[in-house]
Length: 275
Image (tube, rainbow, N blue to C red; front, side, top):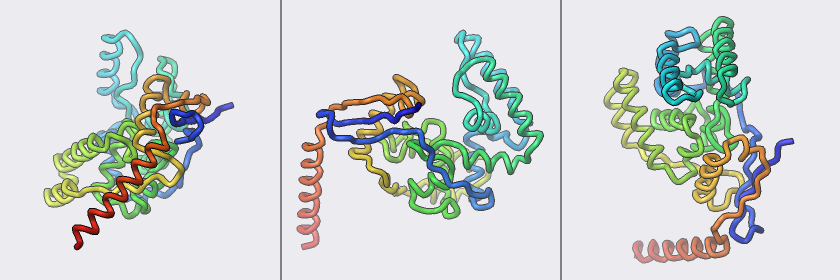
C-alpha cells in the first residue's frame, strides 16, 4: 500500500507539504492544444517525431554506445512514443528486458494509432511536477488558464518541464534555469523556422507570472528544494509512495514572523513612495 511522504519543519509538528502520487489530470483533445505548444514539445523531446516509426535508431545507437562505455543500462534516444509507453504502461526500472518491451510496444502503438493520436495521448499523460499530469492541468496550475490560451513563452516553459519536473518547477528555486531552458527551446523553434524573429523576440522578453500552488504548501521554495534532494537520494517513487517522514531545518514560527515583517516594511515603503 503506497503512503505519502510528509515534510515537517524543525519541530516535527508543523506540516509543510504532503507529497503523494495521486495524479491531477484533465484530458483534452489535441485540437484544444495550440499548434505552437505541440511544436515546442516536439522540438524539445523528439524533433523527428513525424519521421520515425516509434523508434529513433540513431538515438538508440548513441545510447547503446554510452551504455557500453559506462557498463550500465541508461535511458537514451527515447522518442515521444517510447516516453508515452514508459509513463503510461511500464515501470521506470532501467533493465534490458524492460527496454525491449518498450521498443515492441512503441512499434505496436505506432502501427495502431496516428501520429496526432499519439501526440494527444502523450500531452495528456506526461508529468509536469508535483502531482500535475497533462498539459491542461499544468496550464491551469502554473498560469491559471486553459491550455487553449497558452502563449509562445508559456508553451516553451511547459515543454521545458518534463525533462526534470521538480528541478525546473515554477514553484521551486531554479526558475532562472527554467527561463534559460525556455530560451533554449525558443531558439530551437526559431532555428527550425517554426516561429518568426518577431515572435521569438516578443516571447524572449516576456516575464512569466506563475500562479502560487493552490494546495497547502508552506514555504514552497524551500519545500521543493527538499523534495528535489529527496528524489535525488531515494528516487521519485520512494518519495511519492514510501511514506517518508522528513524533518527539515526551517522554523515556521520564525519564517512566518519574517514574512510578516517584510510585508509590513514593503507596505510602508510603498506608502512613502506614493507620498
